Length: 178
Image 1 (cartoon, rainbow, N blue to C red):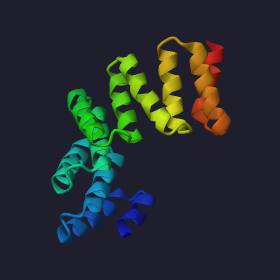
Image 2 (spheres, rainbow, N blue to C red):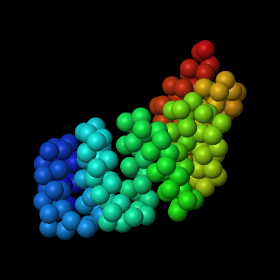
Image 3 (cartoon, rainbow, N blue to C red):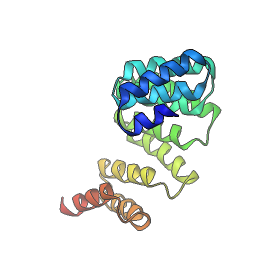
């Protein structure tokens, strides 16, 4: 789609313009709604993203991608109660969706409930054991929990799979330095 070309060029205003035109033609196309919400996400207009995602859920009530993106936008806005509700709703419908599992883990991490957060990250790890972001998030959380040895093991696990993942390299250096 032409909106995707403008997104890649980071001309978000044009991408939004084309997506809005497409939406006028086909207001119930969930892909258009999802892409429009994502563009608002990218420009950090989370209020508009939330509004679009909520409209998307009226079109396709149980869309896991829309639920995940809505939960993320609510989390960024620090509406943890709503974000938790959205992620839990998604997980009731799609219990093996790793994006939703990690999203709920992120909310609990932000709330400082590390035990709950790690539970959701580990469930995600069970489903996709080699996902670098899940492994990295577990390492970060273990570090926050004071479990330096296990955090190092997780960062090393990430680097064994993805040697150029600089975030993990940085965290591993930090663990050895401090």
